[in-house]
Length: 383
Image 1 (cartoon, rainbow, N blue to C red):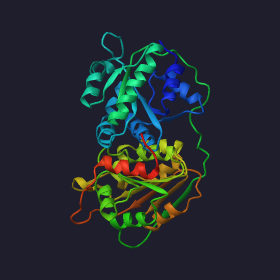
Image 2 (image 1 turned 90 degrees about the vertical axis):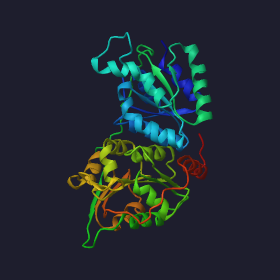
Image 3 (image 1 turned 135 degrees about the vertical axis):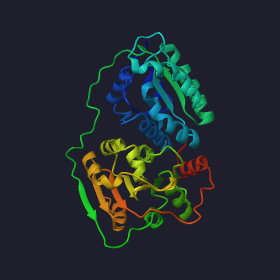
Image 4 (image 1 turned 45 degrees about the vertical axis):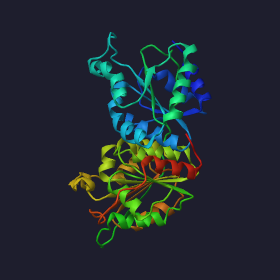
């Protein structure tokens, strides 16, 4: 059995200072130690996939990251592991606990995942080893992880067994209280036809200088249209991990408070991982802008309807702690959202647009990893 301090401080010596995760009783000592230390950072995510995407964003911003989760939640992280971290080649350490380990009495819901945890990581091509239970084994384990992360630039896993870490007391409230934050709420309306997505994206491009902003475009037509309009070094086109644009953008914004991070989201994507609105409301800074372009359909898969017509996203964002929350169908919303920067927290916009896309819409002719590497070179970070 080890002390939380022994692993966390050894990881700090390797440059790991950013932690994200969803709690498990096995992980409690680590989480408590990180929260107690003001020089370390922990984001408590709504689900494991968002935790992984936030860690990926922090890594892009130059902060080496560790994401922690219970193995029962590993399934929530499959999409961002396989279509974000693997595709873009983003290195991080994944610590997953081993609830339901064979031969260890546990709750029935952990039985199957306990049997297949290692196999699932193998299938996702995440190399792993048993989390060290003796202090002498910590530095060699981290050295093996570091060697893989540097060589392959993809995640490396540890599976933690029950009773590996001694208890560690939590000494402070880990959550920022934003319940009293003043929210600037406004609705924009017009009597004109709704704009197409590409017109709004053109507007966004003109308002986001390369040297001061990073754009994260959600998967589907949004990223493809942004690429077609103007391919710039400050843009990321999500090609998978639907719904994770906001958590990736959160991680980048936390690591790089000197830059404005603009998340261009879709209604279907936000609905898929709406819990991250609460995470952004609590942890997001004034450099984060979250814009939802809502055409009420899954446009890139045949325009099947979403339920967004029944959802008041801006009210939800305001209730989650965003400092600014706009909605409507007038594109003036976009310019106000991007240009009025006196908010004391993250800004949210919900703009209704028309369904449909550009004719002969191309796909990016640069690979996801090339997009990422040129962005990181542009903002001066590296893994």
